Length: 86
Image (cartoon, rainbow, N blue to C red; front, side, top):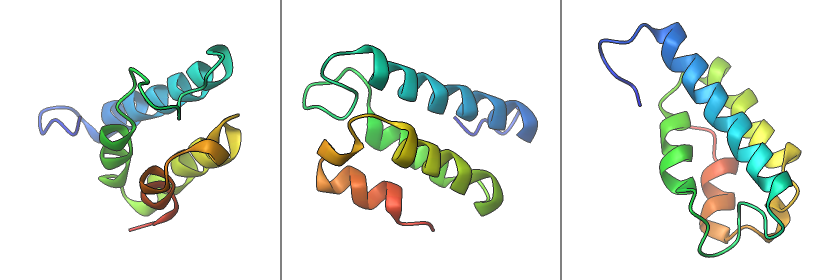
């Protein structure tokens, strides 16, 4: 996602939109976004967020952790990726 040609504000906007889309999917789909077999590649999404500076990254990761319905059912690998800040 971090395209060298895109200004940082565009990348930040795209990653914010991705985060909101994940939260919306989690609330709209009966199984949620953290279930096995979801079409959302959460590992890749979280790794993209990890590329941001801490001031921009932490609120988005907190959004995934605290605004999703099914985070408590997430695999441990995803929980660890989201909870580790750095």
